[in-house]
Length: 202
Image 1 (cartoon, one colour):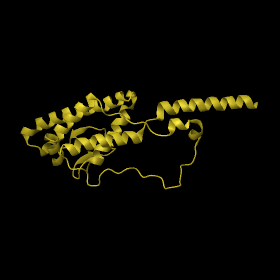
Image 2 (cartoon, rainbow, N blue to C red; image 1 turned 60 degrees about the vertical axis):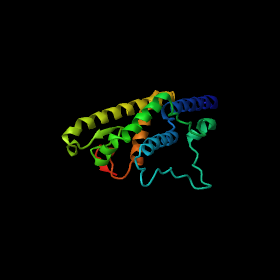
Image 3 (cartoon, one colour; image 1 turned 45 degrees about the horizontal axis):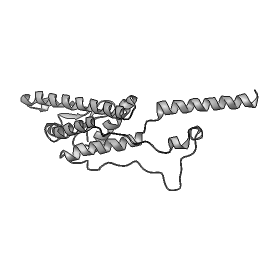
Image 4 (cartoon, rainbow, N blue to C red; image 1 turned 90 degrees about the vertical axis):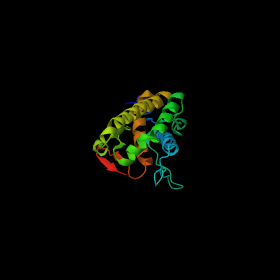
């Protein structure tokens, strides 16, 4: 095979790889984590829920003078495209209204349900009744209604953030990021589900 067709094939493969990366891989995870932490911290802290004892931990930075080794992606993706993650937009009239309702709920019945262990965070970014038997009979209906209303807002929130950023397909990744963030910011003693769905106490 002559050199020119070989170069053309390599170039075509590189272009195809860039297209795959930008469409299927390029979710700005670091920016999403930061945005989720700010939103969750605002809801929990301003509703009177004590912040987590260890606080939020930023991901470790590479040691000074050490740079990640170059890869094939470094060669085919323009530096301007991969230089930094874009910001994630979480503020809109819709998300502000959701935030206000969530603050009121955490400042009211939901905090008590979480403190008692009757309700916990699920591994998909929602809340669920974990132990209805720990509640008096006359409070179980209210607890179910609180959980239903909270989950309705959470579903709307994740979809609204994805839509506001022009990428509705990001909704599952945004949900996953928020799910981890709720657990990270939760006070000690609250319950959450691990990846397998088992309940654990923080």
